[in-house]
Every structure is written in structure tokens, then in C-alpha cells.
Length: 309
Image (cartoon, rainbow, N blue to C red; front, side, top):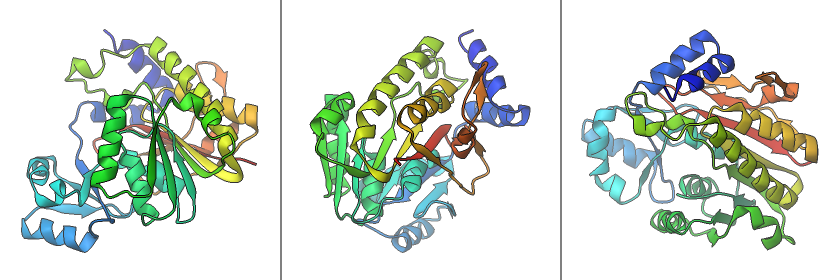
């Protein structure tokens, strides 16, 4: 079976209790979550709409302007005016966290490295009150069009989209420096695995993991020189593989002397990063990084916050 090796690896990454949570996540349909597009609306308007339509909802405590719904209500929401007027944006809980960790504010010059479809770019824009500057990079034409579509319909006026390979960013912006960089990396996307749907995992191989790691390191090599001293880059993936997570961070920090900032988040499905996998040892500093378990609530994610000294 394709996934025998995957689950063998999972047993080396997580405790037995966490493997059970993860397996439940791979066997379940996740809840629906969304954030309020505060450029177009506000929490009061959205809550009033949901209540008047007898939709049960719950506000997420640790992410501003974010709500969860029963999956059964998603169809109604997608046909509602708050959805097609882009007053809300459906987005997974774990996917919302990297921008929260980046914590952009008005006055920051921000680079979103592999930005399509624009979920995090538009989230950052709202967090900055649609003021100052974001550069959003995407190389694929179809994904670039999706990025521009999202920027336009969500009124993200401060983002400039550029179509180019992120590996070449250091040449494009060699005289620029950014205060904050979000690198939501291309990855093996293990969070997508659903055990009831073979199409969700046919792509999985260890070779694919190593191919993605190579690409992640190449892009990192291009963006570190663009970061202002004292400022931060947040790295994230939607995969479980340590080769794409702790190993990438360990390699980059050793080469460039970046400091790992501790991430603290009050969410029951978070775990500290690994310091060892398959006989490879990583810095003890990896405990400051964050793993988010795949679960019935959220996708699997990895997040690290690095500071250029």
C-alpha cells in the first residue's frame, strides 16, 4: 500500500496519542472555518447575518476575526451575500496562523514569497489596514491569475503582484530590503491525505519529499539576503515531513546564523518541533518551532519564525 511507509514515518514523528488524533483527522471531514475580511466588513455584521439565518457559529479565541461552522452549513454560506460579496473568506484554521505569527503592522514592507492563491496575502493586507506595501510573488500563470483575482475582489490595494520564479528574487530586489517575509513554501502537502480518497495521496513518495526540500532550500537562499537585519521571516508548510520542516530550518539557520524565535499559541493541537528524525539530529532550538497536528479541526502545518541578526 502507498501509505504504509507514510504511517511508519508518522509513528516516528508523533506519540501514540498524537498518531490517533492525526489518523482521526485523515479519516474525517474537517469543520468549515472562515475569517472576516475587515476591509469590507466587520464581526458584528457577519454575526448578525449568521444569527438571523439561524446558523450556529463559534468565534476562535486565538485568531482574530475567525469563526468555525458545522460542515453542513458550508453550502448555505457559499450561496450567501457575505460570501459572494467577499465579506468573508473560507480558510483553514492552520492556514491562518503563519500570518498571525508574522504579525505585520502598518509601516512594514512585506514580501509574500509564493503567494497564490492569495489567502495569506489578503489576510496580511487586512492586518495592515490596507496601508503601506506588500510584494506578492507567483511564477505559475494560472496561479498568478488566481492571486490577482483574490487581491482585486478583496480590495487589497497595497499588494503588488509580480510573476516570477521565487528562486530569482534576490536578483530582482538586490537593492531592496524587507521588514517581514512570509515564505509559505511549496511542499508535499501531506495535510491533504484523506484515507477514503486515493486521489488525495497517490502523489506521496519519499522522493517527492526530498525534491520539495531541494526547492525550499533554493528559494530560502534567494530570500534571506532580502531581509533587513533585526527583522523576521516566517516559514510554513502544510506537510508533516521533517525533511521539509525542521531539517530545512536547521540547514538555513546553520548557514546564515538566523535566530529561531519561540512561537507560543494557545491551541490544543500544537506541538514543539522535532530535534531528531531517522537518526538525524537537529538543533535543540527546533523546540521553538511549531507543529500543528492534522485533526478534525485543522490541517497539518509546520511554522518557524526566524530573525536575521
